Image (cartoon, rainbow, N blue to C red; front, side, top):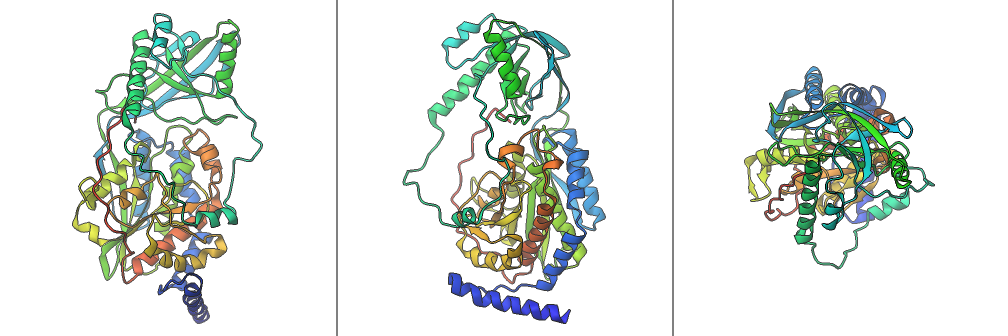
Length: 524
């Protein structure tokens, strides 16, 4: 133990001496390498992260917000964290809308040849009301004059509403890890575009939205059996999201199904030869209207002398409804739950309270984290802040799949760079060495950043995230990289511990100006 303390002190001195020479930063961080060792030893030798991942995916996945699945997953997560000895385990609810879940999907081509159709219904769309058989028809409507072409010709038919696309060969593997050159480029200040701000979406966007609503009503009025869309993936990968509305008062939608591009193409080419194609589908989609709220799962490890201050870590708990939501984002949820377990089991000192948030509704627009931040810290629309705003030391997020953590997006916070540089030192042998001053978007740390709180997303190897698993039927347990997950939990736990034990909270950027609230769309 004494030898390890000596080595720890030597490592700290090396860090303190090395960084000002390299970056001219006055690094004064204290690294408790004994505590980090205990976290590493537990997290790499007795990890439970893949067990957590399997429960969230194999047993309870997928976890569409508002579905029975996500509620059962939340019950399991609460029970598990209570068993670990975490405190104040509870749900915090917020308005969402009706839930939805697919109960049955059967699809076959019947003529001129029989074969099964690979497909998935879009979320928040209705079912067929039983087995429906009908002819397929190509009906691509891109402008007003197209309505007249198909009026009166679609009743009871399966409508292929998109033009067939090319399907190129894959000459490169879909999986990818950052190279040293790519990480070096990521660490550089991005160049300014030289253009002015984009401004609002403008009239053209509104015109597109209006036209799409008119087209949806046309499908309803014509009485189509179902609207078929092409997956943007291929080779068995289908990317599927929503198509209807969470609000029962909104106009109805027809049944909508995404099918594999290869089968969509086969149907199109057969029809172009003037050979009829008959399809049969039985789609049972359920709406849940009894409870129009969703929730966030919250739990804590109490602090000691600074217990009134809080460090948060979080990930979104929800997923889309194909696959089992493994990389998006059971991976982040499992890592954050495991990080809490590591902090508890290892017995490391925590001066500040550590709080986990597992967010619902991220896939519909960061809804859960936005509601939490608004309830606890402040409203970005007015920048009226709550007392808890002054008490948050920092927030850490994981939501880029299963890939190894390689660094941190600083979200423009220059002052935190030397702090994180020192904290990364024990993990450089795991490949974590990059700080990117740039922002990254699309996930829950933005809810904290929006009210001037220090919120950070980790840089992760992409692996197969955007190419294969993100919002797809291939987002399953088998695509998870176990070693990356174990290491990620260790890194997150150490960053959280360091934040909990600093004399000062993490530095903050200047408060942002109030934001105009975003308009409410019709899509979920």
